Length: 247
Image 1: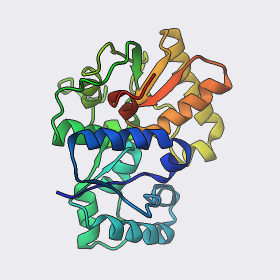
Image 2 (image 1 turned 90 degrees about the vertical axis):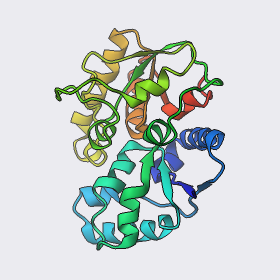
Image 3 (image 1 turned 135 degrees about the horizontal axis):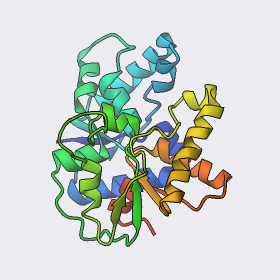
Image 4 (image 1 turned 45 degrees about the horizontal axis):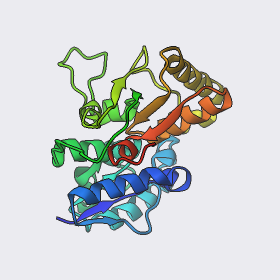
């Protein structure tokens, strides 16, 4: 099978080490993974703001790039959720339907598709806060949302438990949004900032100095807030830890 690796625009610009770790991690398990060249935005910001005509053009362009792959892995929960559940600004077509059905976030690809059971190279002897972002939690179902009366499960925690020395922890209100929310962080920046501060202060009260997530967007937001208020916190995208790149 031909596997594409799609690097979201914001990760390419602001957190390239996350993409590099995810790509190297995938290469440990599969030989056919290929970086999608000329990648672009998933169109989520434009779609969120109602600019359907502009989002349509981007979606059509992305669909033409991804249709040649049997499956596509994306190191971002929020972008994967967009591809799978909200990729509907452009007219329906075989290429568009293929995108919706073939795109996976890194955690679900490792957990559900590859069924990873060991990571012998991964070592991180620290207590780490796990933040399951809103899109990964409720859009991709990577863990049990606290509001649902269903059996406990967490794909992210399952993978982290394979890392030697790592102890998984959570904020007191583990499912509370950190305040990023894409364009929400722009239009309601004061509320967004306070939500981020609440989250990182929660980590601080629980003496958690590391945080990881399947959502780089959330990590960027939380790290920025922590830096602004001089709160000791280091954010790692989950693939950085799973590939043994976190130090």
